[in-house]
Length: 301
Length: 301
Image 1 (cartoon, rainbow over the protein chains, first blue to last red):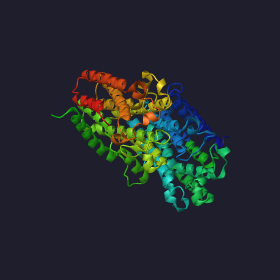
Image 2 (image 1 turned 135 degrees about the vertical axis):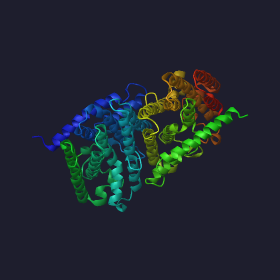
Image 3 (image 1 turned 90 degrees about the horizontal axis):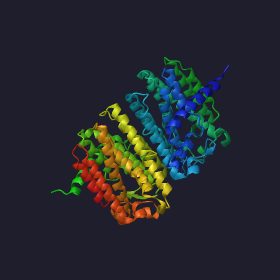
Image 4 (image 1 turned 45 degrees about the horizontal axis):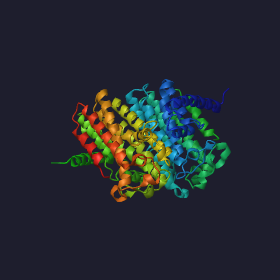
């Protein structure tokens, strides 16, 4: 019998293949000028990420019974926004990281100026991919653009979270659980939450189901962030494919730095129960979603 | 009698007041967290630009008979994309400029990390402003998002132009007129062109009129770029409110550096005639548009 991890790995691999194919057709031709820019975005987009956000989006959309094909351009758009944020996050003025998924980061490979432009372009292409997706009604596309922009922006999205994280740097001991949760609900949580929401919007789920999906995904996002923080403490650079121990070095406010490893694990467990409780309230089959939750709880990279 | 410059100045001032009011309501509250980020975007957005793109968009929309109010969120969005590009363009890894419109640039005032995030956020907010504009049909909004993303992106938009410009840096003597035109049609031309196009889309102009508007605006964009290049050579930092002589220092490929001042002026004149010729083919009143063209031809900053 397949284990939960094997099943989740299957879901991620399937989503990965589908979304990579769609990304391939949506990104500009690497041989067309400006080639340096187009090669830079592909370097980062096809660096071998888990495609967790697209997998989550596809799992939600399919749970609510929509066709897979209608989900893929938005899934690709979400992955483009994620990739843009990683490129800019790795810049010398931000986290100054030279390694990502075991490869040189975009600015190391293509120079800082091109890396800034590559991030900018990926964000642009993400919104264009949704606007141009004629398998969806204009009403749905407009709502997806709005939701994605809210999740990527401020005051409650990814960029807000990055700024709050910068503001908190250097003084992790002074932060409360509420403040840390706010940072992470924004920084990684909002994009995970919107992935689930976009799947439900495309599937035309009712507003009440949408709320429950959002609640589920908020807890999943926090599990994702807490386990990410724990891995930075407990794993090696080799296992992670990115520089380990960076958070402590930068005096970042993380769950283990603020609460210790043991308490951070307890918090992840709390969100695990609440994510599953929310899933239990949905009227649709949720086994794929449960497997993704298990996978994130148990991941080692 | 009012001179052409006075009339154009009136149009720009009117557009400026309208779009500033809309921007004020669309940008996040500067007192809401993360305040540093929200203050940084306002620092750059309200730094006193001419608001040429919004003025052009409003003039086109009104020429085709649409209500002014339906134009303002998209005009604000275009200005947000323009402001994001200036913030990122001024970064140390790009043009490394410390002065813009007579004020310290965003990274000088708020630090590089916040400036990167501020540019990122402005792009996000631009697409959100259009998606959320319920004075427009979802069909129109989706088309505006797509057009704006095309103009801001690559291979034929602003970011493509910036990369081509970077690629050409250091060897202005080896570039042809065609290559220089390609750079500038992308770098500044695409956003000027899309400003005009968005005005016509919102006014529901026919496809043939739209083509003519696009042709007009392409020439206007080239006039804008050539006169901008000339001002960098002929004016002082004080007059411009930004560092003069930067292009020559960076060995940028500009019209005067490649063709000399005299020939660059001739080229601007050629585009001036062709812009007016395109206007002559429109079936709607174009006096405001003619005044904007005159203004750009004769500007001294």
